[in-house]
Image (cartoon, rainbow, N blue to C red; front, top):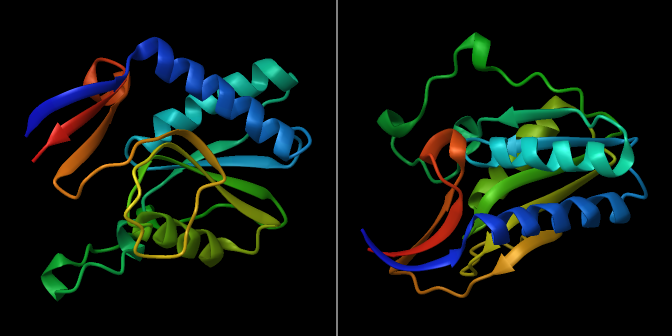
Length: 179
């Protein structure tokens, strides 16, 4: 893949995360019933950043966890593509009557969000499920729309958006790549 453009540098990405934190608190009228669930991989450290900001805003710690949705994907068609669920990877979240905010880096077709919603419902019945993403690049295949968006970036199907976080990439920013 070839770098086409840098969409957000570290400062602009951090500002977007702070803005999303405020929007989440405002929409939920505080943080008392919130639980952030970061979709692995890059959604997890982003959820940690949001939780840290919300704690500063509301002076309330927000429970935060990560979610591996590989076991809930509908686009793994062949048996050999199916991940094997080990007991220690089984989802054990207490989501009952909570306001769940799923956090991911990029929304594209909507299939990752659909899988995460299915995983959440296997754990119980939340009061609400909301979706926060850093980048919405369009091209939805399912009727799923994020509640909180850092930036809308129209792309072609030949392009890829990469959100870099220090935990995995050593830097922080958003990049448009060409296949």
